[in-house]
Image (cartoon, rainbow, N blue to C red; front, side, top):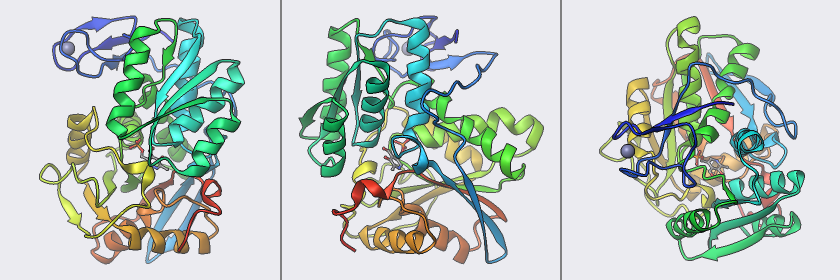
Length: 343
Ligand SMILES: Cc1ncc(COP(=O)(O)O)c(C=O)c1O
Ligand SMILES: [Zn+2]
């Protein structure tokens, strides 16, 4: 697990990441430059999630059940990879994370497993059930007004408490690398030739990780698939930057996990979507309710933020914008929402 980190802005380079994963000169999130990709080591059985192929309208759709990761979301991949890195590189007194919910729960779970304390900063919109889970896992939850404030507070603590370890999924390139193995798994399980990926987007760890994974494998397996990013109406940071093929109006309060107004890696997200030839789709609460119902009716127990992909899939099918082999990661477990969701 030896990485060299480099700033894509000014070229600053280091073998020891900064506590906030950002360039100390110009403030951009650091990237990994590394010839050799280390093997993924499982800590709690994360990864290698099932892929369920469904035939629809002449296409094969592969639903990757990321919600079956140990804490109920795909975030476990990035957290575990980061924890493994820290286990080799730094003696952490505790883990710090800012999160709308799922990365917090994931961090708290790995902290419990490693015998560490966890400090989680979350906006007041955090789902009640996720807050409860954090407390059951022994984490200290610090509530902030906004998602942005949660990030600022977590970074402040990470800079002050030098022996604490900041997971920092919004900025941490080790986290994204951990995510990239989704691409290896689907090609191993379902073969090459994926034409499209439809995925929810907030801070971009999933999108950038999957993009990185497919790029890495492109030499052997040909072209990379088109990336279709799905966002709720309350977040439209992709507008004007990528092709928006579906727009919606109205509230999107159900998408509590997707409210990141300005991701730290926005430029990279935009570049990945555009280079892949994909685009963005915007959805609202009605779309999410329909998505939850449709996915439940197929046996997929997902949370509303995860169900955004359904309206996107229907639209892309109707407009004939997708090819014949589509990957749809189902990101978060609906079991965290039972008792809370009203359809
Ligand atoms: C269930 C779920 N799906 C999708 C996302 C979006 O992922 P990312 O922040 O990597 O863009 C999140 C983020 O928290 C999430 O919790
Ligand atoms: Zn820099």
